[in-house]
Image 1: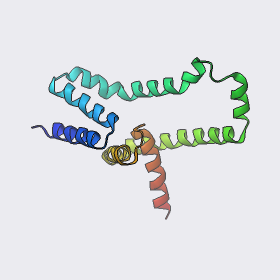
Image 2: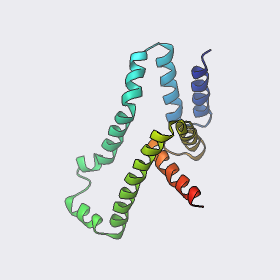
Image 3: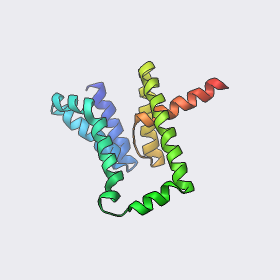
Length: 150
């Protein structure tokens, strides 16, 4: 049996055992595509799945605007409140750290193994959300800067 299939089976089993449907479904989908030898689909997923996932995430975040749950008045009130200003700072910081994460991945692509392992462990054992290796890379870049400073 191919080594990648064994790894995917293991990840799917972890998802099932830990009752994490996202991990189980993701690994299961990749297994089915692999067994059916749909390499074209796998190629498209490899190139575009991150973008597709981000588009779906942005849609989920923007849905309250579409349904009219958030008004112009509430946007203005929130932006000029303390939580709103802190959220703006958080967005700027996250964007900057994600840029540092991209740089980290470009200079040390092998670090993706640790990022993916950590993300899977966080999802399985801490009920985390697999928002992606990019955010994990940004946090890793920050932690590496802190460790180097010490």
